[in-house]
Structures are given as C-alpha cells and as structure tokens.
Amino acid sequence: MKIYSDSVPLQSSKQREAININSRVKAAVEKSALREGVVIVSSLHSDCAVILLQDDPAILDLLDRTLDRLASSEKSEEDTGLTGSIGENPAAHVQGALLGQRVVITFSEARLDLGPREAIFFVELGGIRPRRLIVKILGE
Image 1: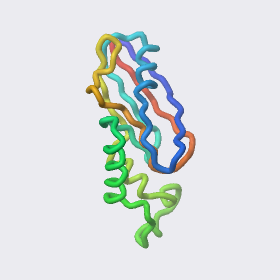
Image 2 (image 1 turned 60 degrees about the horizontal axis):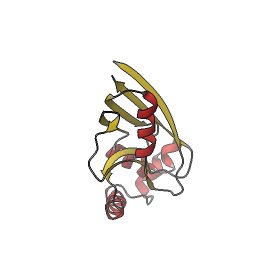
Image 3 (image 1 turned 90 degrees about the horizontal axis):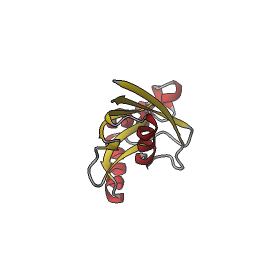
C-alpha cells in the first residue's frame, strides 16, 4: 500500500458557505497516481466541516436552515461565559461537530466512487478566513 498526502487551501466568500471540492479531491487522486483505494478529506478547523451531500441548491439551503435551528448563530446569555476563540462564534464549533470534520471516499480506476449527484463539500461555518484541508490517499 502507498500513501499520498496533499494540502488544499480554501477561503470562503461568506460567513457560512458550502464549497464543492470534488475537483480538488479528484486532482489529488490524479496526482497520487494510485488507481484504487480510499481518500480521507479532513478539515483542520473545528468551526468547519467536510460532508458528502447531493449537489442541489435546495438541499444546501435546507442544511443552512437546519444548522441554525440546531445551534443558532445568535449569541445568548449562556454564551457569555465562553472564552478564547470559541467565544467569538460558539455555534460554528457546535455545527462543525454535528457535521463532522472529515469524510472517507473510495476510488476505483482513479475515479471517486460517488453517486451521480453526490459531491464533497467543505462547509465554512465560522467566517471568512484562510482555511486548509488535508487530503490523505491510501491505495495501490
């Protein structure tokens, strides 16, 4: 088995944004020269997420509304005791934990094994700033 790693820099243009990263992950698989295996895509930030979801604006909108219902971005009195960077936007960290910081995708013949409309998304939850993903590829 061989292992290949790649770093993917990203920056959203909105406070909360889902960015389709299929092309970046495919490019890493192609660079690896591996034909079959698994890809692990990980966010290095707790106020971001990496998810698999159908690439459909209505579903992305529903995700956005659902996140607000589960962990509102509105500051409340309970949030006043939080300190450090999490105190700036505690909801983003909770939303990141709910969605998850990584996904695992198989690939065959150097092609990602995804459904016809399925996509890998980096989800910015905490604001507009430079971010980084790690793409780890294990295979033959």
